[in-house]
Image (cartoon, rainbow over all chains, first blue to last red; front, side, top):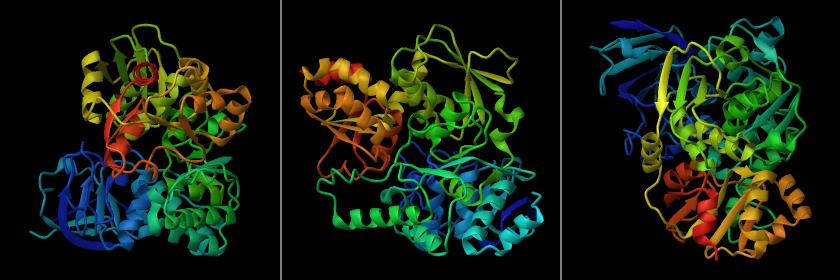
Length: 130
Length: 389
């Protein structure tokens, strides 16, 4: 099964979904890829190696650099799925070469933590391996 | 997104790697925001200067870019860096060396060493309606809402891409229809202090709308002392890039903001009601705030009982020095830093400081989550009343 979505940054990645219902201030993510924000539901969780799903980035414009930094440290998400228009995430993924697609994932009930998908940022597809 | 032939070629590398990277960023943000084309901009304000925010990876990216001969095409100003070079205190030499390398990389690209998050108070501004690209969120929100300039709430990288290409995407808040708010917030209680405005901003940012209207039921004092904290807090909690005030319209949705909401937000951000250090700044203080603080401390006749650090823009410092505010504040035991600000500052260290009192919601958010100190929020007036003798 697959869902079509808008490709934003090219690339293909396979991994487990990690869903954040709340937007993320990327500057609060540590170099190890841990969300370090006392007001965030995923506080303490790692985004490293995941397919990160969130509405959009919020807060500091410097959050874009964080994605690049995580990539250099091998602690970045493998790909990102966003719901909203988002300059911070798009620009960060562009220089970090992290595949990025835009998708109204809340419409579908099979976006769940731990589900394995392939994100295709060339053709705009999310393939569910179930 | 449509690219002209020249833009296509630039993306493919005809004009070198630096310009190609800048176009790659513009294409990504263009696709993300459904832009149909690129348009010229006249001023870019770039963030990502403080070594503590961009780290070694950011330093490497900027040095690589400057070695690829990246040069800015439009007037470009810079956000604060990590410290005041005139007052390095006991910062590690590694921090200072890497901070200087970041500044050198930007200088090589032709960017002014402005180091301010309030460029709207320091620089001559383009005329109303001009498209600009401002990465600092409080500056983007202030410029859209108060100065009637047009910018998206840019990312550090999208503003840099705009600086290098002289262009940005034609989408978001550059389109008139998106500048008209669809969401209204009815402010039900009397908003008085600058902290009240900031708590409102933090509340509104969470709604995550491009543009928002505030309807105040009682009179408010709209000046920079109140508006700047509102912009900064709005930019911290969400992605909103613009607001209007008391604009009558048929809104898609209305929210109430009550005294209880303000208290809930304050409780969410803070975790103590006292502190061993006072911090003023984020955004950097302007002349208005320094004037008010100067008068609250009775021109230096009242003194801070504990350490107090103030961040302000270098140009503002020079102006305030002439007016005597700086000498008065120093007489009151305050330390004043330029070129830097409280967000991710190395000056506040968990090993030395347990808790901070500030009037800035933005500062409180980053001090707690990044510097890992406990934070307390009070208005400037309350701070002076409680912490001065």
